[in-house]
Amino acid sequence: MGIFHKIYLYAFILSAFFLKEGLHAQGNILELLPGTEKVIFDQRTGQHRLIGTVNFTYQGNTMYCDSAHYHHNKKIVHAYGNVQIKKDDINLFCDSLLYYGATKYAKLWGNVRIRDLEYKIATDSLDYNANNGRATYRNYGKIESIVSNEMVTSKYGYFYPNIGSFFFSGEVLYKKDDLIMTTDTLQFAYEKQLTQFFGPTEIKNDSVTINCERGSFHVQREEGTLYKNVKISQSGQVVICDTAYYASKPQIFTARGKVQMDDKQNNQRLLSDVFYSNKSIGKSYITGNALAIQKTENDSIYLISDTLTILEDSIGNAKAMIGNKNVKIYSSSMQSISDSAYYDNKTGQLTLSKSPIIWAKNAQLKGDTIVVFMMDSLVKKAIVSGKASAIMELDSGLYYNQLSGRKMTAWFENNELQRADMNGNAWTILYPIEELKTDSSITKKRLGLNRLYASDLRVFLDSGEVKSITYFDKPDGVFYPMNQIKEEEKFIVGFNWLVAKRPKRPKNIGRKI
Image 1: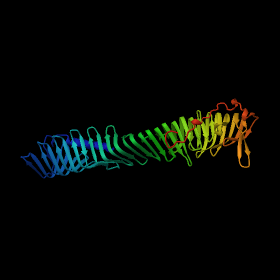
Image 2 (image 1 turned 60 degrees about the vertical axis):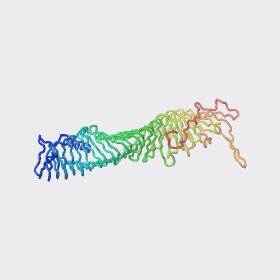
Image 3 (image 1 turned 45 degrees about the vertical axis):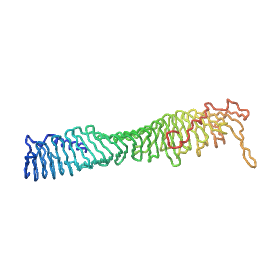
Image 4 (image 1 turned 135 degrees about the vertical axis):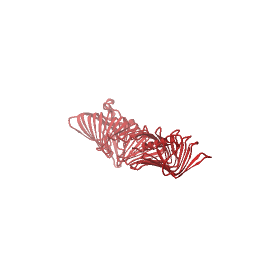
């Protein structure tokens, strides 16, 4: 039985005791029990005075006190000293009690306690209005379980037994086992099993800490909706957002509005408009200005997309990240765009598809699919399949070395394209240079345009310049001196130098590249 259920029962007992008019029992004014030492009646005031271990019953309740005043006409009873009211297993204690039968209003003072075999309530004073069924304490109250670690305390509280509504404010603290909730104001609807909290709130257990300004939480289902300055900390992950939905079972979480998620375990930061996570299936996604920042030892990889999906293993380690639509990637070693991306955290392998392009220094690689092999953010190798091409800008865009084929395997050193193997319908357009040495300097001169066709070939490069070419069959080639280059020979089929689309480094960790 939960603590709010027990408070409901306690409040219902208050209602049963004080709801009737006057102190009548089965038609009698008062039914005294053995032990009451003296009864004095004042004819002038119409008041009965009960003295010395007063015991009586009322409506099935037994009441004990040191002394009591009872006014039949005014329907007022005032009990003093060691007051106890007993009904079944529930006992109510206080130092004094005043009850107005005409207005159905009761006030309990001094060391007020309500107790049964499982729970107890303690406060300095308690008011009860039977007309509206409202019980109120104003100077700190404490409700705690005798048989478990469940407890709630607050400076101010009231509850309605007839409708099962509870309200606590001022330094509200709720504890149950490893769960701790602190807030300014807590409201509970018993029938719906729904709590609402207002003001700075923290909900904490051994695995998660939740902070927000207001929200609601369903006690039985252990799920809640959180608003304003929301912060969720769990297993090395911290999520900050405007609003959120959280369910502990099956660990579903949705965040909206300026979402930021920092994952120390996986060295990731996620920024978006919407964040969704389902720990039970190891899957999360962000959408709406979605940006992921993967930190490595020497660099950071920025990945922006319409939607980013993060896959985790059974212990919460990130396995992979999937970008869908309008993908942009930036690191100091490589930049890329595509409409789909898959990044394997374990192997560092990045697969780009749907019009992918990557840039590394002065090289641009393009194809139907590109698989990039990385090590600590450094590009080591790339496999380009389907209409593969590589373009190296020369002389600030005056010329371009160009490679194309059905498939290309490219190797990089220090983020620079060093070697490219072209397979199937290999086509190259190259502008070789000649170095002229003098005693004081070395000058370079472009010799012309060299166009080659071959089934397969291998090209070695340095800063985009061709060092050597290896052919695996007889090539078909032609050379044009610089002053005889034909316009139709200057570019491979599908040539498009797309430097304007190359992602630029963010000035700060924002949502745009």
